[in-house]
Amino acid sequence: MTFTPPFGRREIEQILPHRDPFLLLDEVIELEPGARVVARKKVREDEWYLAGHFPGRPIMPGVLMVEAMAQTGAVAVLSDEENRGRLALFAGIDDVRFKRIVVPGDVLELTCELERVRGPVGRGKATATVDGELAVRGTLTFAVTAADA
Image 1 (cartoon, rainbow, N blue to C red):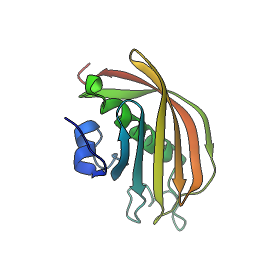
Image 2 (cartoon, helix red, strand yellow):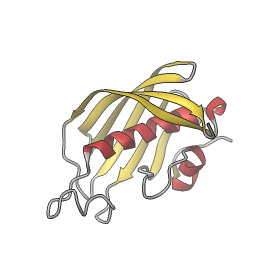
Image 3 (cartoon, rainbow, N blue to C red):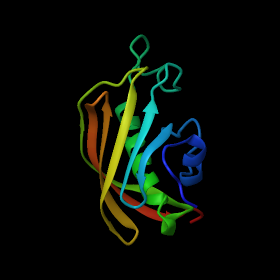
Image 4 (cartoon, rainbow, N blue to C red):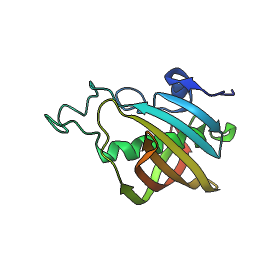
C-alpha cells in the first residue's frame, strides 16, 4: 500500500497502531518512507490533557510533544514496506530541548529525519515548530518489533 501526502488520520491509522485519545497527529504533509516525514498536530482547546495542565493556563505537556515527534518518526519507519504492521518503540530519547510553550490554537509542524537504521534499531532527528519557531528538538532512538510479540 502506498500513501501519497497530504493525508489525514484515516491513513495515519493504517500506518500507526495509536488511537484516540493517544494519536497525536492530524495529517502528514510530506513522506519519504524509511527516510523523512513532516506532519501536523493542531492543539485544540478540548484536548484531554489540558484540563489539568494547567487549569487557567493550558499548556501542551513537553512529554506529549516528544511523543508527537516519535509518532511522526514512526510514520516514516512503519510506512516502509518491510515494517508494515509492526510497532516502533522508544529505545532512547537524547538531547531534547524545549524552546517554546505550546498552547491551544497552535499548530505543531513535526519533522523527523531518520539518520541511521541498522536492523531493527534506528535513530532520527526530530523537531516541532509553531509558525516556524522551534518548540522542541531531540534525537529519538527506536526499535521495530512485531505487533503481536
